[in-house]
Amino acid sequence: MKQSVILDESAIRRALTRIAHEIIERNKGIDDVVLVGIKTRGETLADRLARRIEEIEGKPIALGNLDITLYRDDLSKKSLDPEVKATELPHDINGKTVVLVDDVLYTGRTVRAAMDALVDHGRPDYIQLAVLIDRGHRELPIRPDFIGKNVPTSKSEQVVVRLSEVDTADEVTINQQ
Image (cartoon, rainbow, N blue to C red; front, side, top):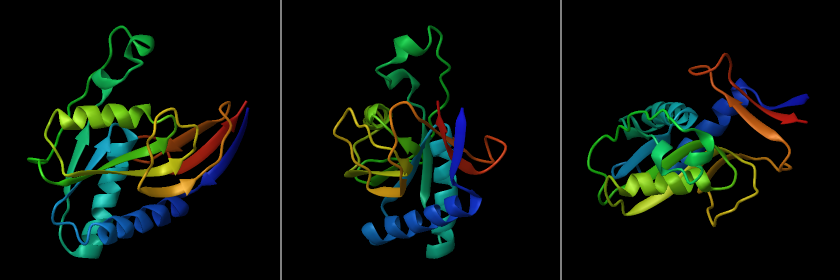
């Protein structure tokens, strides 16, 4: 298997800094904005974005995380005994702009599940999507609002995001069969 690094630690940091600025600019500040990371690596990326935004704005942004396990349309294929983790949303999301954060956007099914899970907790005015990697191959009409890097891939390739809080290093690789 051939592995190529497409983002190293500094490239990930720069991409997240750019996304943080774009979120602030698009929403004219952060007063009614909530970052919600999709577990597991989306949660870590949302934490990093929240720190960057606080450095820029001088105040914290509302932050939460979402477990989408029971909302997946492929749940029966994945496991007979799924591991469900806690969802933690900061407060009422009604009337807010929620920025869903994930590591890789591929078919769009994870994001669809996240939107279903989110609306079970309230009715935000807007839902935006921030992803570190957009690799294409959508099966659903879902488009990110904030992208760290567009990476054209074939369906046989695998994009792997490693983050130091979860894994051993910060890098994004493409694995080719």
